Length: 217
Image (tube, rainbow, N blue to C red; front, side, top):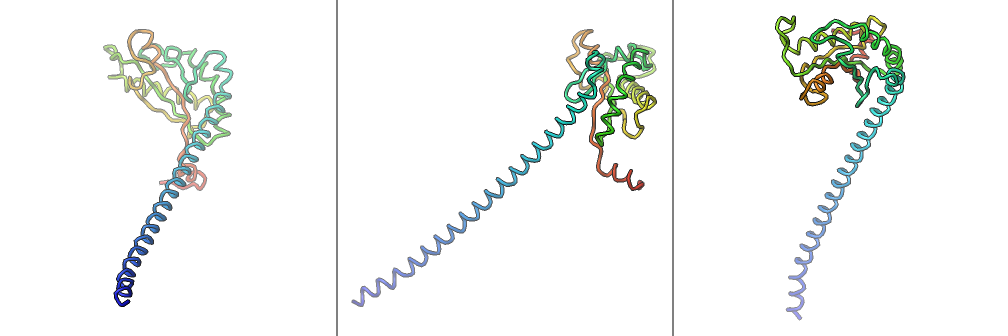
């Protein structure tokens, strides 16, 4: 009888240890479950934000395409991936930064739809100049394609503002021979790469806030 009671007393600590281990295991599993749920919620939130962002970008693209319906129908410009493309041959002569009469007419056709778009969207317009990969002709005023693409972008930017676009909503950028639309393999492809593109850019929140409050550096 004494031996039985002693055996029960010895087994009691074993069950207590086992109970503690089970409680610890359940606690660990609960922590893992909470962590997994937290990760899933974070991923769901990130996915929802990404979907909302893409939907907003798509709506902006559709709005701009609708505004450009007339010049697009007439074949004066192209519209791809949210960027308005204008052939460099229409705007400028080869290696020149002087706007041709035909090019100015094309820019005039864009003023009204771009004005309408800017009135409805708090965004900026980036005018980007691109060239082909051929070096400058001897005697050209520009040493390289960077300079030519920069001046062409500035020429288009200044013309757009002179025609009525607000000065603080348009800016110029130069890419030279980089980021070609198609590989530079022949005269036809190089002609496609000599171009100017106009794309929309979200305005930084601080910029619009400073404009409203009149604060600046």
